[in-house]
Image 1 (cartoon, rainbow, N blue to C red):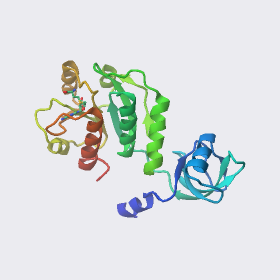
Image 2 (spheres, helix red, strand yellow; image 1 turned 30 degrees about the vertical axis):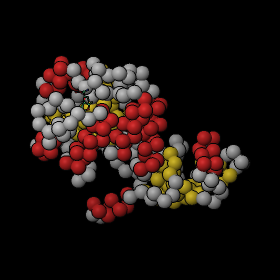
Image 3 (cartoon, rainbow, N blue to C red; image 1 turned 45 degrees about the horizontal axis):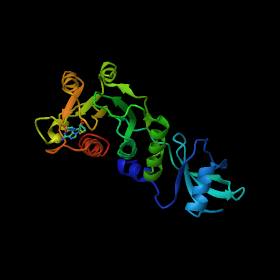
Image 4 (spheres, rainbow, N blue to C red; image 1 turned 120 degrees about the vertical axis):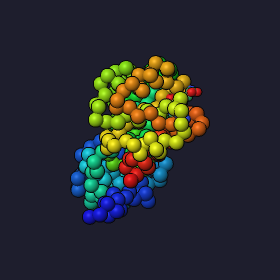
Length: 254
Ligand code: SAH
């Protein structure tokens, strides 16, 4: 099977609603929808008995299911055939200084859509947001996966201090540090020189990296600093820009 065949096989069907469930999925299983899901399907999407839906749980691939109603408030799914097998999780590690809530929600969703396999919040000197709800990060990751047909839900790691991130870094993974003080502006030549397949991206907070942090990063053999163009980008803009150039130049868009 060629890579294109695999791509076509793994292409999601965007015409049928997709929903994340936490339970085991297999042909014939009867899965009770949660109350919030029942309300959303019945009252927002106006779906009812006999309608089709796609279910995934991050472990068993994606399954076609049919809606049945147990009661007015409670829907359940009758699981039918498997539509797509469970793919390998993405390998890209996305390290980021947490932002204020709405921008953080956006940043998490974009990192998932762009193929991050693990999200690593990093507490830097200028980080404004120290209280992070793992539950909220996961909910945003699941929402992005539902909308974009991503079947492997990225891992959300506990926040780590900047110093610990560097001290515990696995040296076989290249840490691509988006440096707003970089002396050039085109990331592509720098990315082209990276040989490792295992990659990570690091984006700073709205206040940027401190001079000490920048010096520490430049002193690490596993770090490659890249510019993101001639202008300073907001952290959430830089997130999407960095993910796009890295995935396109040396990541999974190849
Ligand atoms: N307030 C800072 C900018 C911080 S932008 C200042 O004025 O210098 C937030 C983060 O986005 C940065 O830490 C960096 O990781 C990334 N970023 C923004 N613009 C960038 C650029 N032109 N090149 C590389 N990284 C950039």
